[in-house]
Length: 98
Image (cartoon, rainbow, N blue to C red; front, side, top):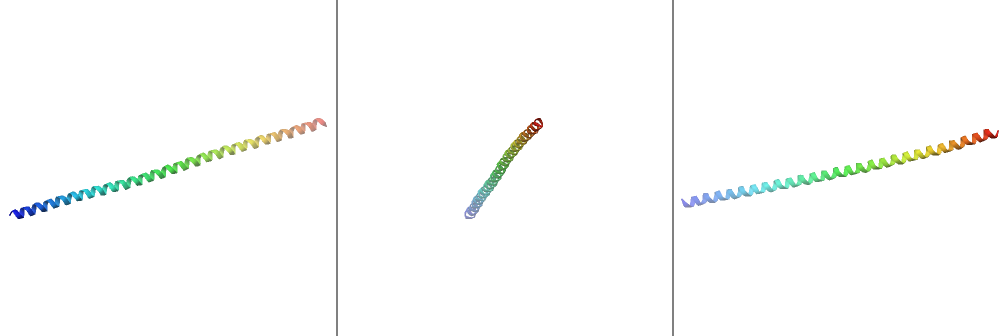
């Protein structure tokens, strides 16, 4: 009888240890999964930030180009006005001389 009881006791202990090990294994698995997920999220966040930075850079570049274009247009207009003025003055002089 004692032998049987001891056997049952050992069996119970073995099962208990096995369950404990199983729970530990599951916990580790969950932790690893969580870490992987976290890494993935970080990667995504990094990508998004990079994209945003690129967009900002492009926006700035576009703004700069627009400004340059505007300046060039202004300059051309100024030159044209100057040219027209000289032409007008020449015409006036010619008229006066006649």
